[in-house]
Amino acid sequence: KRKAVDDHDSVDHASRDFANFIHEGTVLIEYIKPQAGVTGRDFTGKLIEAEEPQEYNIPQFSVDNASVETKDDDKHTLYLAKKEGYVIFENNALRVDDHLEMDSINLKSTGHITSEGGKDVSINIKGDATEDKIGPNMKVDVATLNMGGSVAEGAEIHAKKAIIGGQTHLTSKIFAEMADIKVHKGYLEASKAKITSIESGKVFALDVTAQTAIGAEVHGLDVHIAEIKSHCTIEFANTLTIGKVTGDENKFILTPFATKQSHADLTDTLKKLEEYKKNTEKLEKLEKRLRDRVNQNKKNLDLLVENIKEIKAKGQKPNDTISKRYQDLVQERHDLKTTMEERAHLIEAIQALNEKVEEYQHALMQARFTIEGNWSGYNELTFQMLSPKKVLKYVPKSSLGQETIYVIVNQDGDYEVKRDLLHKHHEEEAPPPPSKEPEKANEEKPDAAAEAPETENEATEANDESPGSEESHNKATEAPEGENTAKSEEQPPA
Image 1 (cartoon, rainbow, N blue to C red):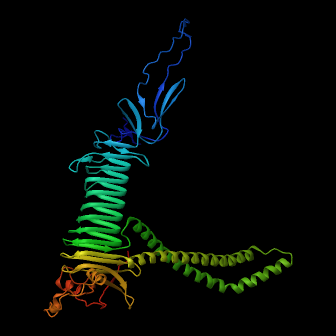
Image 2 (cartoon, rainbow, N blue to C red):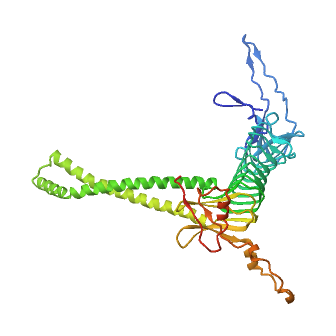
């Protein structure tokens, strides 16, 4: 057991290496053999004969030859790890295993568990969802974590693959490439996340799949949630598919900033773009001033050059005043050339950044929101377009649904929210068979007004009528099919 001491001589009692992770080639045990002594004298000069060495504490345990290498010579016996993993000594046998079975991880029994970058190290923690199997404020860093219990407050997990059969606490943090969680209430960053229920938890992932969500905050590239309850905020950049909405006060946002990666990249891109544009404007003004000055001094420079030639032809050297004036005029031309080159480089950089912004914009135009069931209560869709910057909002009517919603650019060059009804596609793909009973053809037909018309819901402006008002609700659903009714508002600068 080891107590970790920081730079301030403070002991971290959780970093004690109860589960000792080692790398390949690490010396696990060294047995030093007794060596023959040398004859000598005591302080009175009396001769002391060296005694024959005697062996004590000779290793009596066995080793796993697949994971432990033994090197023996006259001086010592070394036991070295043949692979990375955890040192395990049980049943009087020494081995190194990359898989660790544990009952729990907590301050009292284990402390933090880390693999120090181990590629194939895994931990399996037995238990059920009712027990906290990773204790408060514990840190776990392994390749694979498979646990049946729950994660307590303040715990932090880093793994390539994390499978959690219980729930995560509100203050816990999970960082994984692939995460499979039963009930998520804490913070999660992953490439791929599969969650049974998100309950007020935060999720940042490229691919998110969940069965239910309530009070959730989800940010992803592609998101699929079978049931949305209430008070959820879902940001997506490519696809968002909802099975059904059984609650209200939910916000669904199409945004290029949906993922951690795109947020960092696009924020940096827009920041550079603004900076480069400002610098280009400054250089353009400087270039104009320098060009005007060079043009004004062109005759002076030509006369000065002729004058210097005449002086040199006489075998004389131009005085300091003439030389200084000549250098100043030449420097002006050099400054103009440098400024022009710098501005040209900035213009090329701006063009490259604009192309990247257009790629994000193109992705937004390809994005799709699909609801497979019907809407319930008040919900809001927001489309944050990038180039040009505009925000469109769509408030669906609770009686409608089963539709795919997206944004197009209409003939007037403005954004427009479009709807494709899912049942329309089903009818086109599989038309109903003709009636086999002609005598029933004259039966009374249902009133056409009772059938739900295919409409293109109006995208309302962000600061229009009250979002929950009946007037704005009707405006979002009364537009006849094919009519251009989308409204948009210009997004304020970031």
